[in-house]
Length: 125
Figure (cartoon, rainbow, N blue to C red):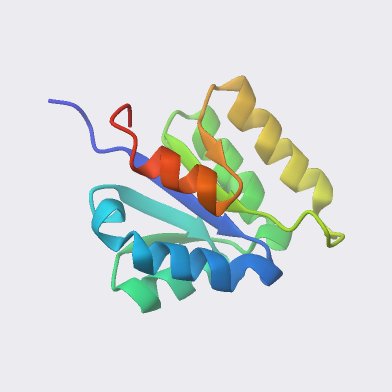
């Protein structure tokens, strides 16, 4: 029997409303997965959807690195990361490291709503 896939949910501050709305609209698909996320994003999604979302630290406080470590341990299968390309991030090196580790381990990483929809509804997942 195939293991339940784990999906990490992350969003920069300006994108938190977008990922919460996306999660609400995709609740039925998300309930099939183990979910985790960084700090506030995980809490907001859990509150809005009623889904259990394992919380890691806030991104700037090490949450991005925690997610990256779980990818390296092969404990995360997909990353949904609504990032804000127009705002400077104080933890930008951590964000780049997370994106890099996802690519190194061949993990699907969706960085916007359109890609997240394709990934989460794919028969390949």
